[in-house]
Length: 134
Image 1 (cartoon, rainbow, N blue to C red):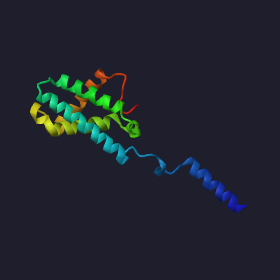
Image 2: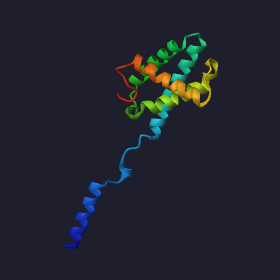
Image 3: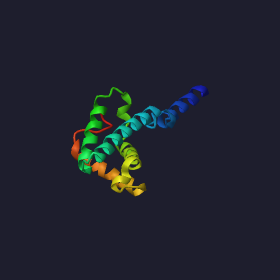
Image 4: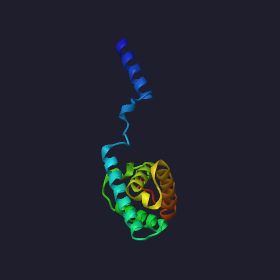
C-alpha cells in the first residue's frame, strides 16, 4: 500500500512539473542549417542587386521576394521552426559582412540598422506572410 502511494505521489509530481529536457529545442542543427542557407541566399541576392545599381529599397524588396519564393516552395519541414527575429539577425550579419561596407554599414551598429530596416521592409513587402509560418 505504501508503494502505491509513493508511485502515485511520484506520478503527480511528474505531471505537475514535467521535465524540461523533453521539449523540442528550436536550436535544432537542421533549423540552423536551413537558416544559414536562407541568409546566404538572401545576402547573395541583395549584394548582387546593390552591385548592379539597384537602390537599397529595390534590392531589399527583390531579395525578400526571391527568398520568400524559395522558402514557400521548399519541402523542408524545419522551416516552421524558424524564428523571424533570429533569421533577420542572421541575414543582417551576413549582408553587413558580405557587402555592408559598400553602403556604409559596418560592425554591430550596421547589423542593428540593417536588421530593423529588413524587418520594416519585410512587413511592408509581405504583410500576409511570415518566414516561420508555412
